[in-house]
Length: 333
Ligand SMILES: Cc1cc2nc3c(=O)[nH]c(=O)nc-3n(C[C@H](O)[C@H](O)[C@H](O)COP(=O)(O)OP(=O)(O)OC[C@H]3O[C@@H](n4cnc5c(N)ncnc54)[C@H](O)[C@@H]3O)c2cc1C
Image (tube, helix red, strand yellow):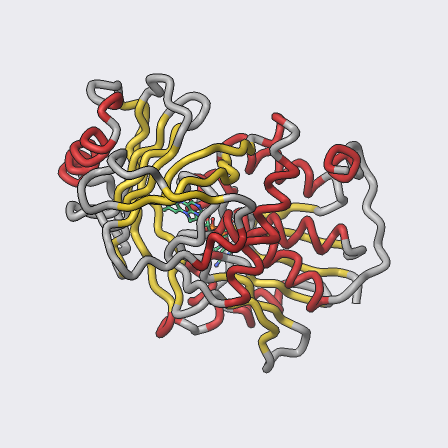
C-alpha cells in the first residue's frame, strides 16, 4: 500500500497530501480547482474552531494545528503570523473549551468592549491565504506529490479512473455529493469585504453581534471584514446590501476602518456538516478515507486532521525528493 490519491487541493487536501508523503507514501492530488479558487482562498483565516462542534477530536486537531502553524510562523515565506486579538461574546453561556488549545489567554479588562460584552484576549496564528496556499502547494510538491486536474461525480467514479492503492476524499463541501452524504452536510455561506489596512494589527471577532456575525482580521495588505454565516445558502454572489451592513458593523466595532477604500470582496461556502468527518469508509474495493466537513475551521484543523488521516493510512516506504524536502523540519527545529 504505497500509492495514495487525495481528491481535493484545498487547505485540507494539501495538508493531508503533505503528511501522507511525509509518512512515506507516493501521493497524487487530483482536483478540479486550485486552493486559491476554492473556499480556502476566501477564508479570513485565523486559528479558531468556528462553525464546528468542540468535541475532543476537534479540539485535539485544533491544538496540533496551532502548534504547527506557530512553528511555520517563524518563516515569513509561509504567510503565517502569530497575532494578538479578542474573541468577544455577548452571552452568558460562553463556550471557552477552545482556550485549552491556546498557550495563554486572558479576560479583556472591563470598560474596553461595548456594554454587556465580555472578551478573551489571546495570540493565535493568522494565515495570509494567498501566500500560505501557494507555499503549502510548493512544500507538498517538494515532497514528491504530483498534481492532476480532473472532476468526479462519485467515489466510485474516482476509483474507476484511479490506480492508487488508497483513496482520501478531502473535497470540502462537495465531498458530500461524492459519498452521497448530503443529508448531514450543508453550505454555510460567508461574505467578506476587504479594506485597505489603516495600520491595524489586532483582530477581533464578535459572533453574537445583534446585526450578525462580525469580525475584523487585519492582514499585511488589507483587512478582512465579515461576515455572514448563512446555513443552507448556496448563493455565491456578492450581495451589496449585505456588504453595506458588514461595513456598518465593523466600523462601529473598529472606528479606524471608517472611509477605508474597498480593495476586494468575496463569498465562499464553508463545508458545514453535522460533525467533521475523519474516518475510514467501508464498502469500496480499496481503502477509502473521508476528511471533510470542516465548517469555518478548515485552516484551524488542517494539520491535526492531516496527521489523523496519515496515522489511519499507516506508514509507507516511498521517499520523495526534491528541493526543500526537509526545509520545514530544519526551520522548525
Ligand atoms: C468567509 C469565510 C471565512 C473563513 N474564515 C476562516 C477562518 O478564519 N479560519 C478557518 O480555519 N477557516 C475559515 N473558513 C473556513 C475555511 O475556508 C474552510 O473550512 C476550508 O477552506 C475548507 O477547506 P477544504 O480543503 O475542505 O475545501 P475547499 O477549499 O473547498 O477545497 C475543495 C477541493 O476539492 C476539490 N473538489 C471538490 N469536489 C471535487 C470533485 N467532485 N472532483 C474533483 N475535485 C473536487 C476542489 O477542486 C478543491 O480543490 C472561512 C470560510 C469562509 C467562507
